Length: 305
Image (cartoon, rainbow, N blue to C red; front, side):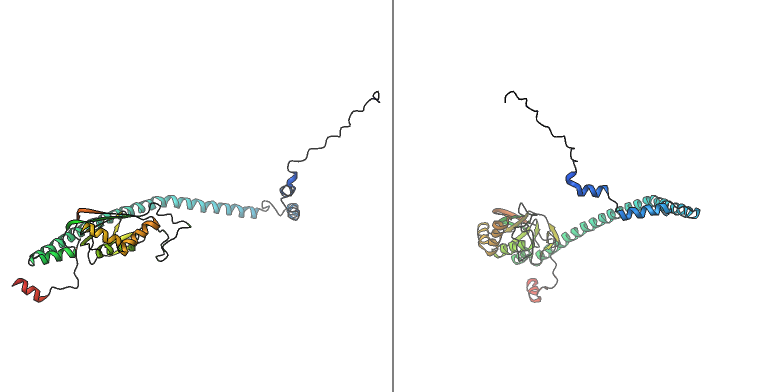
């Protein structure tokens, strides 16, 4: 057996390599036969009958040329009109900008005049209060009405939005009673409670960001902005209150409004700090407009006699 010659192993004939896109036969078929057979047959029939392609007759050629000329004319006229109108539009835009600048300057001048007139009215009111007898009662009336600037011991309360204010993403628990989606922002009703809490705790005079509050002051909202007497405020909101500093601070923090502010700080990240001050200075209110109250006749006669 060892002497018998061994036959070499039989090698199979090499097979043709498969196409790389063999696994995508459907896509290949769609790409190779993008045009349906029926559509291809119809196109070929129209071509043999001379129905497809460019027009054959002179009339059809003239019509096509006329259409092309008309389209080119329309495009040319449109481009020409746009080019001619561009300087006019730019001029009108510049005139509008100049007009806005002029009116803005005029409004600023009028606002300055209004501020001066308010200061003059306030000064005349304070002078009238002093000339009505110069008594301590008149000074007290001017102080309580906000007609005169005041200073004395008190507290400084700074309220600011949360650091992440503006997020209000999913999972946040908004103040459902107010409908606000961003719970990290200080709202007008929050400042109303803060100011009312300070009044109730014994404050004798209060201001927010340098604006003196009176019995006629209003704290409202315009969008996300807080308005005090129709003047917008920018956070942080610095509230100054004149009164017995320690008692005022303690009473406010223990009051329902102080606890409300504490809840905003703990639950929504609103930042608030309160400190006692040895001397805080509050300006006079811009103007105190009296619409209904009238001086009592008997009191006037007793004061002048």
